[in-house]
Image (cartoon, rainbow, N blue to C red; front, side):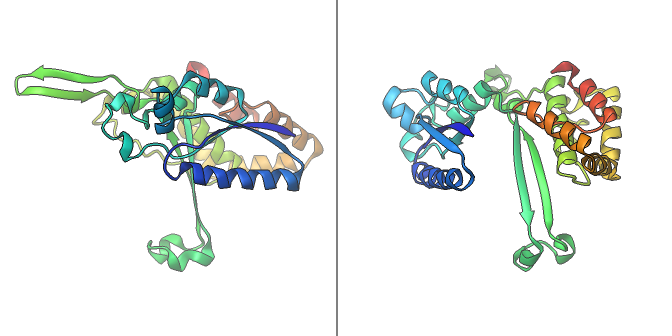
Length: 270
């Protein structure tokens, strides 16, 4: 198959790392019969030096036209004196927003053979660790309103953290789908601060109840059982592969009518 990859070398060690990554990708193409076309673009400090913008429109266009984006580190001491809105790191937020990259998948795997080198207690890492952290990327404080104001105590600054119900549903759905696809046994919510922050209250009781039903079925293994049962038949495998082919850039396919129904309900505000 042919793929177009946008390469943003970035700054500092970025060009060196992305250069080696391109070599690895080319070897993968040779071994498995794929063809990769690399289109290079600037972002971060390199783009500022050339265009005075950390994320030129041309770079966004190249990324949108690509099948994937290979991004190197951006920023460095050279640009530290620039105002916050013009610093190289702003390019990262711009790319997330322009490309709709709302889900950050961060796997953490510890093989049992390496457990002795882990600083965690043996009883925690016994059998190894296999965790996938799903982080929301396009909402919250990074993209909220910010500014300064005058108060009775003098000048003050503020940054607003805001999440819509649709954003919460979307990232929760992604986590549920990934848990089922990877046959993990549990999904945990690390944003349990609804008693203190309004953004933790955006999901209503009805939504929470539906999500709890999905969590319960993931934790008791029934989703994984359904998946394995479906994959034992030619029809089940064909259906699964067809759904995988049709899935969007950010979402995984679902297996089982009940799960599809729940996911459809959760996405109603997307």
